[in-house]
Image 1 (cartoon, one colour):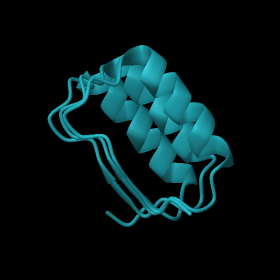
Image 2 (tube, helix red, strand yellow; image 1 turned 90 degrees about the horizontal axis):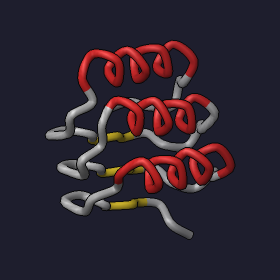
Image 3 (spheres, one colour; image 1 turned 30 degrees about the horizontal axis):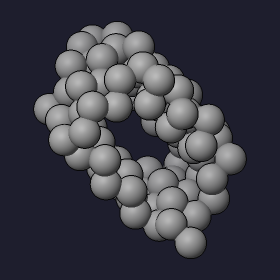
Length: 88
């Protein structure tokens, strides 16, 4: 059972963000997700945030050192209004 996913410093891009979105929507075991320095932009952030909106197992998320911009930050803020499992 996968509980921690460290993708840090690998280019995720839009295709990877979409794959993460799809996986997060149905995953119930992942607790920690590290996406530091993965070249995630605002579009990728919106996809990941959408997946997390429907995920209730991830407790720790690190998306530092990406270029999510204001739009990506807003997508994560919106997600946090509906996701009660994220703690950090």
